[in-house]
Length: 455
Image (cartoon, rainbow, N blue to C red; front, side, top):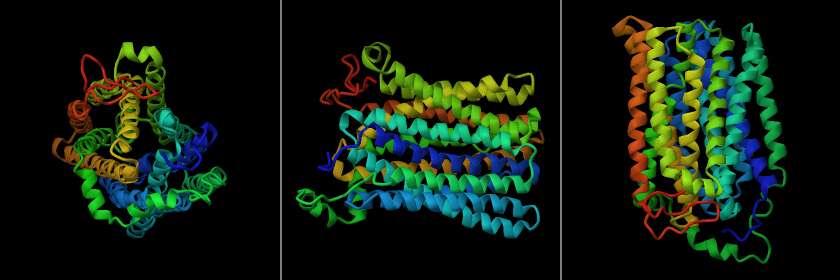
């Protein structure tokens, strides 16, 4: 661990608030604006799919940012600057959506700029936040700290989606701009307050840290990334992150238009449905955190079991949405979405716990590069998933001519991807050997299956 003072729970909570602010801006751009483009403006679903996919493409810079953090640079400027850029991009995205109603080409051009800023902001703030956690949080607290921070991001998703949904009815372009502008100012102020004197001095006087990190500063980015990619377990986990996030994200830009077109929900109601999904994700995370503690963890399962089980239940929930697309309003849409969210939360929190363990398993000096690699894999998956889901929806509508069949085909594809992700979760665990020591926060090797780590 670093020679710098370690973070207590209060500082970890401050990081969680920053993560919640990021989620608050992102959920409006990926759900509410998507719905308005497709339903209110009658634009092809491929347009918001392309925009969201493009902002994920921009996040390919994550490994380089993580590498920079590995070299001993301060994380505070990256996080605060990233939050400002993200907030600016969020407001410009709302402005571009309104502009599309009067001048489509100009609105789309502004939207491309806005989503570029969103991608850069998320990359700068999110990657640096995770690197700071890995280096300033005690080993025994890393997994629960990651759980707290991630759950606070989900809280940001849920609270913002539900609140914006209520404030947005009845919808008007002016009301959208007011809400978006107020949200952008609020998140920057909260981030500034949370980051005030959080990191402290990076290299205290008299510390041996500068001499310790000097050899690492001479390393180039490309050889370091190649070294990390050559690690078998890091590579396996990268594949799992990509497949699971591909399945998770493909429904993001389809769910609200689906609920509006087949179930007749208003923009506010579909935004609240998205909020219900994120709230259910939070419930799933809390369930794993409560069940996966102390002696209960040893009796009820292991972290790979949670990853596999969460993916498989997610696949079943997606099959339920297939039936909803075929049957229409009689289907219990809200309970189905809630089940999907709980299952998503279960496999997500297991994946986060695994990420925090693996990030420093091969050496703390490359923790940022590993997290950047996994962040890039997630970004690619979200970009491809969002674009693939919307393109498949448009194509299925064109070929089948019926909304129900079109949406069912998309949900069926996502169900299959969750099954593949479950297989990949098993693959990740097979690289854990009997020499992996059980840590203070509950990870160890099962005597029956040495590749499973108890949570």
